[in-house]
Amino acid sequence: MRRYEVLILVLGFLVAQPRQYVKIGKLRYGGGGDWYGNQKSLQNLLQYVQQHAPIPVQLQEDVILPSAPNLNEYVLLYACGHGNIQFSPEETANLRKYLLSGGFLLLDDDYGMHEYAKKALKELIPEGEFTLIPANHPIFHCYYEFPYGLPKVHEHDNKAPQFYGLFYQGRLVAALTYEADLGDGWEDPQVHKDPPEVRELAFKMGVNILCYVLTHAW
Image 1 (cartoon, rainbow, N blue to C red):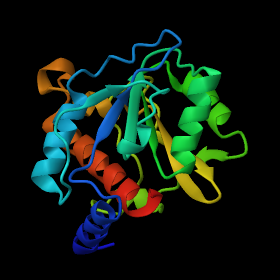
Image 2: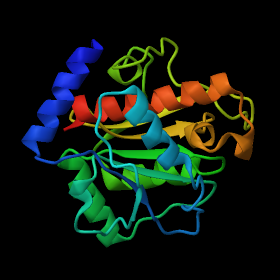
Image 3: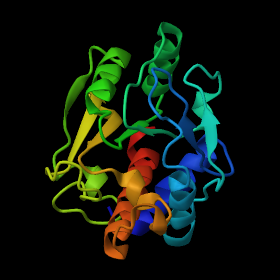
């Protein structure tokens, strides 16, 4: 997809909703995990999007509960952490409704979140398919090109980065990073001291995720 096509589709999305700007929410989940981590990550990503992509975004992130009645105001919900993540039955039902209505959930494993997040995703849509997202998927090519898939940002166990997707009736409704940690790359540079070129890849992947959600998920 060419970038001008992305712009046309994004403008069409804004008219159809309708809304003046795109909002991303930071999910305040239960279970004991540090949902509050990556304190500047989303704000930095939103600023990068504003400067490099044709998407009118709300620059201030909103912290939102999974049970909130206004989840549909957010085109994307983001959650990060190092540990457990759980949703109550009420939260599960609300998130499921959000995802099946066109919303998107991005879970960013900071290290140690993977198994909990995978379990939580499968509980949201048990009939969905949880699988690796292949490198030829549009999410890696809809704005910037990532021919080899998800970029490696933080070392963790020095394993290859993996991007898992939850698909429902062929549509990607949620994704989980593993051994990548995009949010570390979005943070202020002095926090994790990632090289500029690595942070740039993380930001570009963030742009791709948002562009994909706006042009494919809804």
